[in-house]
Image (cartoon, rainbow, N blue to C red; front, top):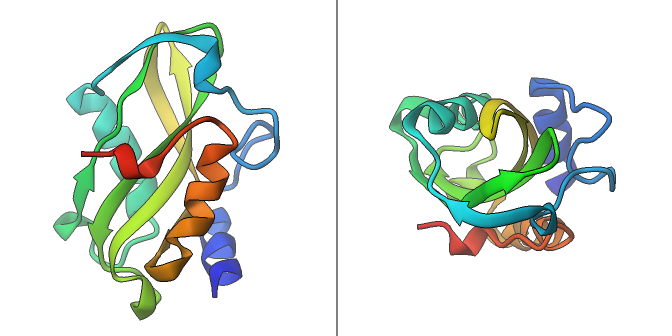
Length: 139
């Protein structure tokens, strides 16, 4: 089932060459400090994640910190969302990773990398760990 979620996430918005899981995405090591996302940045991420939810308007997001300053034009970001999945076993808390494009230190677009709930949350946590991220730190 995890493969189906991965494929559905990729179909919703095609990943770029530096997408999560390709080994070329930016890590927080390239950043100094962390900050909260702005409302506009949250909306960009919600739009990307929402493509993979049955009822995105009813979803409740839990946000992790974002790199305050980065020298890269893309940053991998991990957090969680409570929502309805197209796969009933994944309903509820789901972890996700997105590739956030950054311009002038602000998120300008986001592409879904992976989202999973249920026992497969560990798959996303493992992917996030490759970038020194932890979706369970989202509040």
